[in-house]
Length: 264
Ligand code: 2AM
Ligand code: CA
Image (cartoon, rainbow, N blue to C red):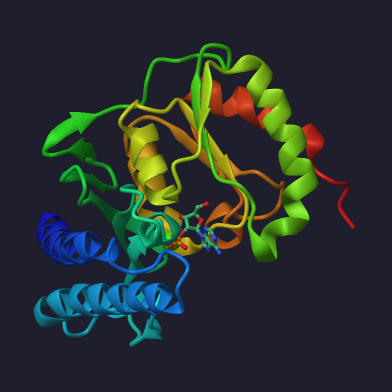
């Protein structure tokens, strides 16, 4: 598994380096222009192609599920790739974004890499072997309650706006207890921060598999918990998830679920 992870690390660094090179040019484009959106779409695509090529050269039989290119190939090994998580930040020149790569083998998440090219921080995890930041073991924080905790989240957007009302009620509840709430804009990086103990908990609706696969594995390997925000709605497919240290996870779940709408 370490050899597979090393290839993913190489690919993530390449993708991240490409993004950061282009990031320095984005300031020169008008923030509202269509050209800017097209430019970012091209960066996403180019980064994803570079990541896939790097892995495919080493593992030609593996399959890929990329945010940009969808599913290609088939087999036991599937690489789940978000080449640029935090696109809205990137478009606006806001330096919080990441590359996320996870490996599923016969349906089980086995390894993950999240690379933050702005800070050059590399988060990794292998099932059964723990999680690391730049090669050093990381663990979730020792926080035991939402009171005093720093909680990460993301707001529902467009197709997830149906969660808008319950989400605002949840935000109200968490605001009353937590030391602070952060909404940085790259879900993959938020999850890596939970694994590293920088955030004590996290919740969001409507994420995609490529946003969360690598980070969720890291949290589990760092001693934390990840689970379904909506009962019976598996988090890896629905993207509705709660995560945190074991106690913060449980407390968050208890605080958030009462605000969910009644099932139809
Ligand atoms: P993205 O940057 O790759 O799109 C932020 O709430 C998280 O939601 C990010 O991980 C972001 O990933 C994801 N997301 C997906 N679609 C989005 C959208 N239309 N607007 C904002 N965030 C989106
Ligand atoms: Ca994403």
